[in-house]
Amino acid sequence: MATNKVLRVYIPITKDLAVASDQALVNGKPSNLPLGPGEYQVESIEDLEKAGFPIDWSRSLMASGAKGQVQEGHFEFRLLLPDSKKEDGTYDYAAKGVVKIGVTDASLVLDGSKGNSVEGLVVSGGVFGEDTLAILAGLAKEGVYLKITGMHLDADDDQHYTSKMVERSWLHDGTSDGDRNIFYPKASANDNQTNIRSITDLGVALDGSNYLEMPVYRGVGVNVTMTTEWVRR
Image 1 (cartoon, one colour):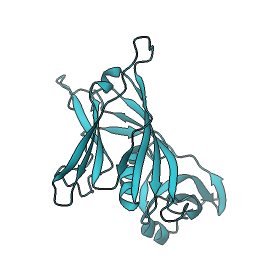
Image 2 (cartoon, one colour; image 1 turned 90 degrees about the horizontal axis):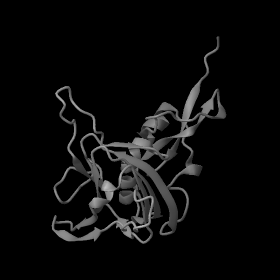
Image 3 (cartoon, helix red, strand yellow; image 1 turned 90 degrees about the vertical axis):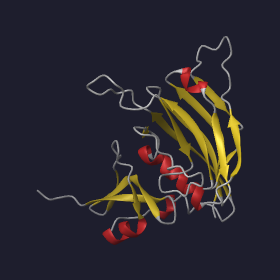
Image 4 (cartoon, rainbow, N blue to C red; image 1 turned 180 degrees about the vertical axis):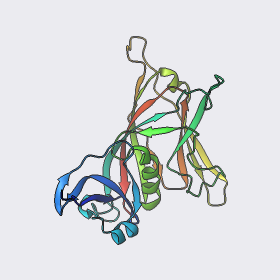
């Protein structure tokens, strides 16, 4: 039986990195090959080219739009801090964590913290799956800015909205450039879906020197849809 040669097609997301797409070359012919859970790999473009993997620059986030031109888009993802327990009945993870959107563990975070790490946090869904937060941080760093213009949230429980989000900014010498508190809209008394909230005028511009803090609670997942603007450097 002949062996099919399958090469996954990758899409550039920055000048140096690309993410696996749902397309592939099977024996040299373009084919649809959906990605399974956890297959949203982000790889070095240089390594991919050396290994012979095809790069689809026509679908690149870097290719569309001239420098300085605003691109509009949206991201969908789910955040969950699991409520799993150890054999002795204690929880594996803390009751609350803070997700930092716009930075990663590899970012130069000027407040001295360790990027967006929340022990046990599961990121899933959307185009980029578990790599979504890394993609957002990469766009913020590679572009002039990545602006979150709006946010729609659907939480498992309205406990998610008991804490505020905070936009934190820092100067190059590590001193604070000011914080901005962002409160979730309150549900009305006659609202039957108190677990759903929307912010239409968020206006958080991420540029690598700031981030958006979003608290998450153990066992309370939240589905996030963000509308964005990105300006290519």
